[in-house]
Length: 284
Image (cartoon, rainbow, N blue to C red; front, side):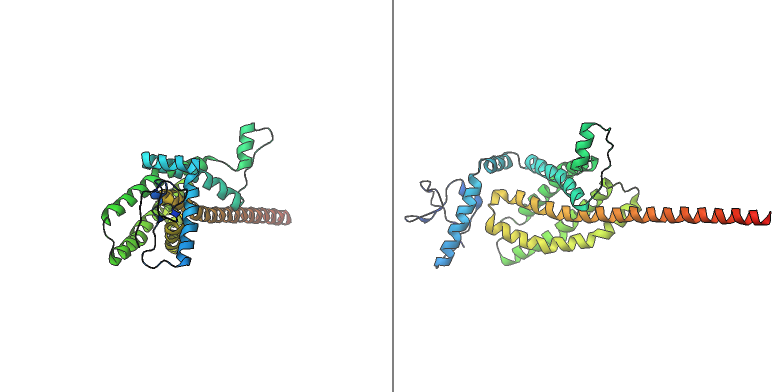
């Protein structure tokens, strides 16, 4: 596999009859890999389809602006992206889990709009978590991985990169996410935080191990390299929304169980008081 670069900028797509395979300067950022050696019609057709799709995506003005911002200010752009996704993740999880927001008719218009959109203070906290915790942590971890495995192209180094990503980076990211969700969810005390982490740590880590290889394969095959950060943020957004919904449903079940327990205790106390009063009347 080789990356061809003839420097041709005369054609709209990275394929033409004279240069066979080539790249434009904009498309060169996508790091498309060209098959080396015997090129069958299937490989040529597959490469043309993927290259046209990637070039059309990179040609979008919004995507071009995002890529330019990512190149100029990588950490800040990732922080804004993670913060926005975290904000909408909380709102989407509220809608999917069916969280009820009570709002009186006499409340202000802004309060009624927020209740209708199922937006609360947790959405702001999720945005702050994405901006100040998630994005910097992922950014510097990726930088460390790139520096550690820079220039290593052997099979052992690729296996080592994958193992480091799955058995070192992923557990740390999962632990930080669950601890942050416990704080945002209103956990008080270390025991409650540890219980919440124990409930979801193994499940979330297992799901991450299952999704990460397939997401990496899709990214290398179909997504231009400048957009890999956004793609993996969207994957994390989906996984985080799934677990956020599960956490909210569990919290709702616990609240309902507590309400039933209170109703049962109150009814038993009222029945005991009535029986005691009737027994005192009989004695009289």
